[in-house]
Image 1 (tube, protein in one colour):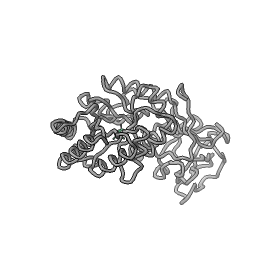
Image 2: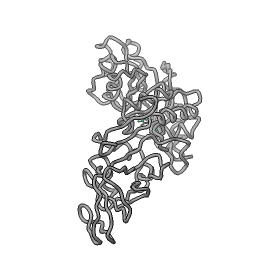
Image 3: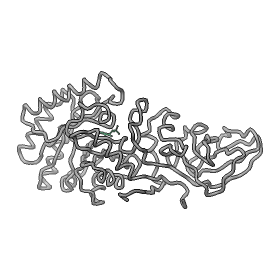
Image 4: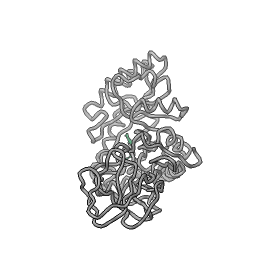
Length: 374
Ligand SMILES: *Cc1c(COP(=O)(O)O)cnc(C)c1O
């Protein structure tokens, strides 16, 4: 490894995880969620790996992400899940990007853009079935459906899908799951009664894909599981394989005296004469500063806790009487099969979710891809 820190992404693991999710999906198609740089794994590369693994759709949050996929030549069906006023919807239509539409303002904007682009936009009506986040709730639903069907009748839109999102799919048996499925059914029936003809219905995220067969409908939309991380750590890993390994080379190794304070604030003090190693990755790379004196990494064959505060570009570990040479590898997290912590271990220590650990690895950290889909 010649770079100071890198995120190695095993594209075969992404392909295999998609294969596993396809089995869980039954007859439903798989839309791999690749928003936020594919949860830090790299939008275009992970997107291609997911398609190679059998995903027939890609899902993103924002239109700019979909346009980047198109720019890179990825032309699989792609859905933008989060609409914002003033986005270049004409380009979405021209680039054949599907749009989730959860408000009347967006029907109007998208229909206008489609008219200018000279072809109909494909939209998925977004139902708020109980999460109170995006989409139209029960009181706004009839007006949304009505506006969309009118725009469809005038040739500007095609209403191809209906979708929603679970609030608690990762909590087995949570009562909101059944309530959301009921609301989804009722909102689907209402729209169909007034003339909607949906090609696809979809609501399942990773947790639902893995544990709620009745939620699969026509498409499932796994995100975190595609990257090999479990959406339900207390239930299990479901045979998924983590795709990302974060590693760095030791920048400096030195012997220090007993009683030496380490890093900003001197919050760590060496108990004995010891060897410290400097790891060239910090919060500027996405290493959580809350992980100071807390998170473990694998160095010289053993787990070591970060010694003192995580700085912007670097942190220190205490090797005791073990030795390393500058340039030797330190594994911050990975699949866990070589003794390194996993992103889930870091998340547990920090009181967050693995999603945040991998997504926050910054643009300064180069991604190194391996696997057939490279
Ligand atoms: C992110 C996202 C998903 C995937 O969620 P995971 O828990 O990562 O599987 C599915 N649907 C929508 C609309 C999303 O925004």
